[in-house]
Length: 536
Image (cartoon, rainbow, N blue to C red; front, side, top):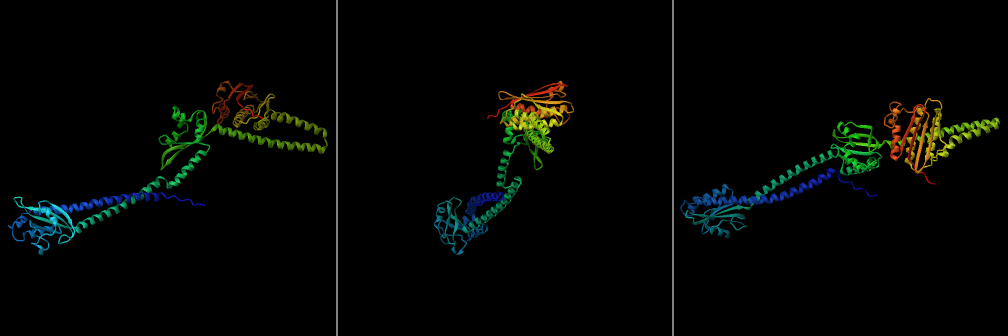
């Protein structure tokens, strides 16, 4: 198995990158500054030597000495004083015949100046050269300036020598300063890099970049796989997260883009409690929201970073779908209870038959078996014959037994016919509506004598019509228009959701529901819905 290469840590990556940049910049800056400082040092030394040479050329004692008018040795004294004061290599003053009047080595006084680079100065022009071992004192930078008398006639030359070792010393000193500057810059850069890495780690909550990338991919996969819609907003009410399930729930009754971007865009955040949570910082749990004709069960929580609210997240599911699922599960549970009850009753009947066999009461046994068969045919066989869907048949069988326990007769009319269908959503909606209507009818008949409920089914042109009629107390005309409103009920608090969900489910499938009632005589609900019959 190939080993997975571990990515570099953020601290290591940033340190290497920033250190490389800082080092490159320091090297380039060092090279540029070193070359500039070298030229600057040489120019400074040249200007200094040239200034000394011009000053000496204008000194009266020098002119008088060259003209033979001054005291003996005056030029040597002036030149040596200038050389020592300015730390020069040599100061040599010659006449027009190149005869030395000053020199650091007094034994060379009166002798001819060595070097042809003095020729330009003898012609009245300043010059500067770097000669190697051409002079008597060694390698030096030599500056030449002509000397004039009062009548502006040239009478000599001032030659200034600066040792190249002196120039190199100045450059070396500058070089070390640059090195120290670069070293301090590197230390400051390293400290800044460490602070940058520390700040980045705090911002990224201690995660490495590859860990953040993995968490991001895992988060996206998780958000798209969950069955809840998820919407997240930032502090400016801008959407930062919107998963596929949220799109599906939003577009059930229209394009979700219009809801978010159109005239209704200012309403949905309030309906999902995002604005309230963003302001208060308190979560809202298990709240109902009405969006695009759907009832959503919503949980909204704030997003808090460093004790500051930076956004809010809402998760929601279609409450109608959840209620339908619960109704279907309840139907399955009722079906199982019914089978368990019938199994128990069947065992009791077997015991009766076995007892009659032991007593050899064959005539009574025959009568008992025929009555049992007729009862089964009347109650179960007829229902199974008329209702072909096993799920709905089991559901109705359970309701029949439940009604019998409450001393209520629940029957399917003889002319009823309900073929099977492959549409699970239709079955779920049918169970939801029937369940609510039958439970309401049984509640209305509770405690009444001769209570009866009749259910009929009729199909035509891919449409199913179902009628549920009871002889209960009925519904007062004043409240008939309100029975489909959410949370409205005449049975007390905590009720009033059943008929609301039933009608919502029918409308969603393209169906409808009507109610007729006469107080004290009857109540009849008639509903229709599309019904695709199973072929074969």
